[in-house]
Amino acid sequence: MQNPPSAPVGRTIEKKPGLSLRILRIFTDIYPGEVLTAFLLTLNVFLLLTAYYIIKPVRDALMLEGWPPEVKNYLSAAIAVLLILVIKAFSLIASRLPRQRLISWVTLFFISNIVLFYVLHLTAIPAGTMGIIFYIWASIFNVLVIAQFWGFANDIYTEDVGKRLFPIVAFGATFGGFAGGSITKWLILPLGTFQLLLVSGGILGVCILLTWVIHRRETGKPDKTVPEAANTVLPDKKDQLKPLQKIGAFQLLFKKRYLLYIAFFVMLLNFVNTNGVFMLDKVADNTASRAIELGNAAGMTRGEFLTQFYASFYNVQNLFAMFVQLFLVSRIFKWFGVRVAVFFLPVLALGGYVMISFGAYLLLVKWVKALENGMDYSLMNTTRHSLYLITTREEKYKAQAATKTFFHRAGDVLSTLLVFIGTSFLAFRIENFAMVNVVLIFLWIVLGILIFKEHKKLSERSLAP
Image (tube, rainbow, N blue to C red; front, top):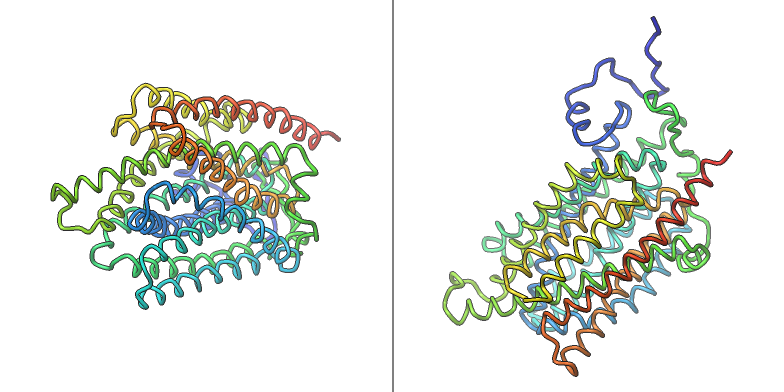
């Protein structure tokens, strides 16, 4: 009779799976030595998304309270230009600081901004001005803070481990979105808009502590393997303690076709998504106006009504996203692989916008966007981050950040141009915007095919002796 495999240095392997391990194995393949780090990463991204989904309804409400939905789209051009500078600064800092300090300083910067917005609110700055400034800031905060978290997670795990555990980690993001929306809905009336922002700042402070705990846990032990997964070798800890090489994010992107395909894939994804958001915003704007006129707003101001509306909508999309994340993502990865998972969202979005193109009814637009966003924030979100598991450390942090920020916002800029031309010169209705999305989705699928081929080549190359 063979003896059980011995535990690696610094890690205890249970003889029988504990309760937490048995529960997690319902959703994905996970081994005893992997549970704690996966849990801490899941908690970290849960709190990050909770903080963001407190900020996000406030951002949308402030904008729509002072400006029509079109202005929200037009700001995307300014955000995209700013992000070029932000990414250059981020790349420089990342080349000088180890990962835990990089994440800490960037997060502390955004926490200080939240305090500043609260102070500006007390000075009675005009609502329209505050709405624009806060919208730009929140849009940069969202993409940069989340991108650096996933760079951190990619740095910890190898491709094989990441494909197994990212579905669990990404569930934290999905559940955090739901929790943030719920907190906003419950506390908007007793606390008010800007007091909610201070709550999000406190949550971000906890995220910094978790980053340090995870970093110390993963770098404080010698390199090891997980006994039950004999071929799984975890990353070299010495490399993880070093700052990144001094090479620019955009330089990295344009050196490798695979990274460039992902960047344009994300750009088209966001182009389609932002067009859909514009459709939803028009519906929300009309709904709020009618509710105020008819006295059906339950005593709320227009801003409070819109904040509650968006919080409720986000809860619907996040409930769907949690279901997909828990019960479908790991199974899709296991049965079909990451490369095939790339196509699920485009196909779903294609069906939804084809239906809207025949008639943009309130309930239809709401549910199409909820399902599209839910699939984006669960399966597609996990898939996008998993695509970087086969890349270098510099590509994980810098190229991924550039894609998640600049190219993501470039999709917003394209949507802005479409909205401007469609509303100013072509008298587009929502159905017309939906038809444009249908065409864009076919291009999106073509990029997915190119990513499929490049990922396959890179995977085969990494397995070659």
